[in-house]
Each structure stands twice: as structure tokens, then as C-alpha cells.
Length: 522
Image (cartoon, rainbow, N blue to C red; front, side, top):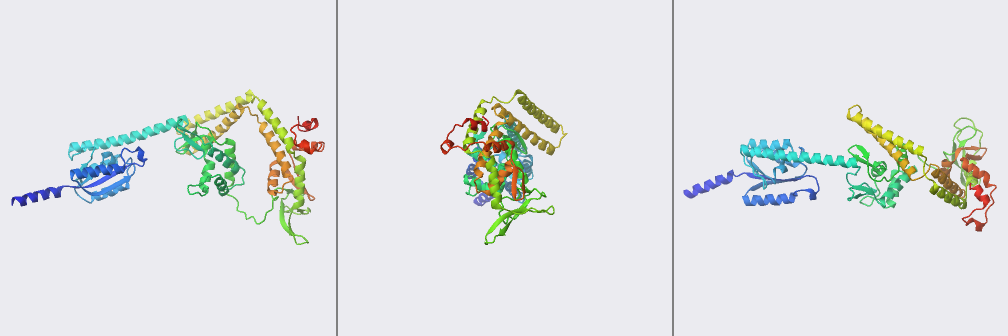
């Protein structure tokens, strides 16, 4: 009889012992920033259950922050708890269960209603008494305080980095993180690739797909080895980090790192993007290089093109007035003859390599001798920069006072920041001693060199692009094509007839005669 009573007593004690739900959690941060990983928590909790002879009914684990309510696994565990009576929870610490007041209150209420009869923690003592519940509330409160304080510290650190103009996270393509200065700097290779991508797209001849292929040829591809997607190309071409800006949220700030792209190049790319947002769908059935270039001098209509079949059966292209403005008496002009006339015109305004090389060397010498911009120009730029900074401060004050909506504030701020960046870039140019006339002069010389090359070229599309660049008022009348050239090019055309043709041996010389120097403006 005594043995039966003892067995019955032990059975009652055993059956009254609760079964436990094991819960392990870590936040979504990296493993090396966690106090304990999930694997370490599971090992410690299972060891505690073995030592204390606790029966684990089910294990729950998740990787999600407990700062805000809404954890799926935690909700699933409590849904099962609410359907049962007298269960326990086994966790590493109360902050693993909750770091917010809602989840913390849910745990305390479950203890009050006896849905949870035991809470076990290796690092925290708890007993289901008024004092134990009070200490549990204190533990949850401390966890929430730690979470809130950590959030404020992070925000404060971000604000400080923004004030210093430092990049906040991983460097975008074209830059590399420098841990010594806690900022980013241009990558020695990828920065040049970014500049090339902007320069290529600014020409207006690329699509997202062709530019992705251009970058793929430079080994800029996805992890799978395929060209970049369209959205990646657009993100690259619109990323203001390449102007030296830092983004936080939906707002841009001045950065304290070297920009990769100049404001002028960035704006030219944005204009190309805007023009291509809604491109006209045209089916190009034929290749007519000179369409869209000339107008009819008689009626003002554009010159169109079409195929024709000659007497010998061969096909050729010819150009004629589209006559969209009424009757016109102008006849057609074969493409071969039109090409000959354009090349002859380019030849009259061109300069051979010998002269352009001498002139480019002269421009380099003038550029080295140039001492910079005048004081008044520098003062004007400084005044413009100061005025933009004052407008920025007034705009910020108006936004903080609630006088300007956030959408208007962000739009105006973006315009002011880009304008300020352009002014600062101009100031840098002046500080480097570069005058506004140097680059246009150099570009004109290179254009004349290009004209000499294209005068004997067979690339009709390239010839058309060049004529569009330098020519004005291109017209066709009586089977004769003409376009006006810049004034310096007209001077070249007038003086070219007076210039003697150099001997073959003289062409390789780097020195020019007195008459040649006079022609070149020496």
C-alpha cells in the first residue's frame, strides 16, 4: 500500500510539471554583431532543459527584430499557448521574447491568466509572484529602453556623418570604402568606367541595352556574367553620388568626397534621359544617312530620300524635296553626288594634321601661361555660391517652420544643390587657371582635324553627325548642297587657297614657315 501511494504521488508531481516551448531569436543584423547566435542559444537552452529535467514540447526560432510587434514565429507560438493551459516558455533572456511594450504585455498577461505557468531563463530569475511579475516588467522595460536608446544613438551617428559629408553605407559602383577616413573615394578603375558610361550616353546614340553591352565589354556585368539590367543602367545614370552627394531617406546632402562626374556632364545625361522617356516608335526600313539634315531652299520642306532603279538595273539612293508645303520645282539629287559636295565643303574648311598639331601645341602653351580668371569673375562666382547657400538656409528654415510642404522643399533643394555644385565646379576651373576660351578653341581645332579626316571618309552617318555639329542652315537648291560654317572655319576656307601645298618631307616637320604661321594665326 505504501509503495502504491508513493508511485501515485510521484505521478501527480510528474503530471503537474509543465511542458515548455523553447524560443530562440536574433535580430536581422549580421552574425558577428550578435551577442549570441541562434545556434548558441539553442545549445544553452537544451543543456538547461537536460539539467533541470524540463520537457520541451516544441522549439521556435526566428531572425527578426523585436523592436516592433509583428513577428510571425512569436505570434505562432502564442497562438498555440492561448489554446492550451499551463505551459512554460524557455528562452535565453526576457529581451529575446520582447523589446516592445505590446509583446511584453502579452507575455505578462499570459502569466496572469495562467496560460503560461513558468518562464525559465539561464541568465534571469523569474517566479510567478507579484515580485517576480514586477521584475519581469522591469526587464521588459529595460529591453525597450535599450532598443530605443540604440535607435537614437544610431540616428545621432547618422546625423553626425551627414554633417561631415561622409557616405553612410557600402560604396556605390565607381567608389571604394576607405575605413581609415570612414568615407568613400573613387575607385582607380571603376571611376573611369562610370565617367565613360556618362560620356557615351550623353552622345544620345545609346539605349539602356546598348550601354549595358558597352559596360559588359569593360567587364561590368552581373554576378551571373550577364549585362546589367535596364533598371541598373538607369540607376547608374541618375545616381547623384557621382556628383558628390550623400542620400539619406529621400533627401540628398553635400558629401565630403571627390565627385566622379562633372555637373555639366551629369545634366547633359539627364536631358538625354528626359528626351528618351517616351521615345517615338519608328520602324526604320531603309538606311538613308542624310535624311533630317537638309531643307529645300525653295519651299523650306525637309529633304527626303528613296530608292530608285537605274537603266542598268542597279539600285541607288537619291534625295529630293518632300514637297509638304506645296508645289516645288526642285529636282532630285543622287546620294553619291550629295556626298561628294559635302566632302568637298568639309575639305575647304579643314586643316591637315600638321597644322592642327602645331595649333594644339600653341594652345597648350597659352594654357600654361594663363594665370586664371579676373578678380571680378571670381567675386561673381563667390557671390553666386553665397547667394545659393543663403537660399538653401532660408528654404530649410521655411520647411522647419511648416511654411513649405515637404514635396516642394525636396524639389527646390535638389535644384539648389545641383546649381550650387555647378557653381563650385566653375570656381574650381578658375582656381586651376583655365579660361573659358581655351576649351572652345581646342575643340574647334579638333573639329577642323576631324573635317580633314571625314572629307575622305565613307562613313556617311559620321559625316552627317559632324555637319549637324558644326554646320548651320543646311540647304539644297538646284542639285547643290550648302551649309554655313563657323566664322573661324570661314577664315580657314578663304586663306586655304593662298596656302602652298607642303612637300611630302615637310609634312612630317614640327616647324612651320612664316606664311604658314600667319595662316595659323601666329
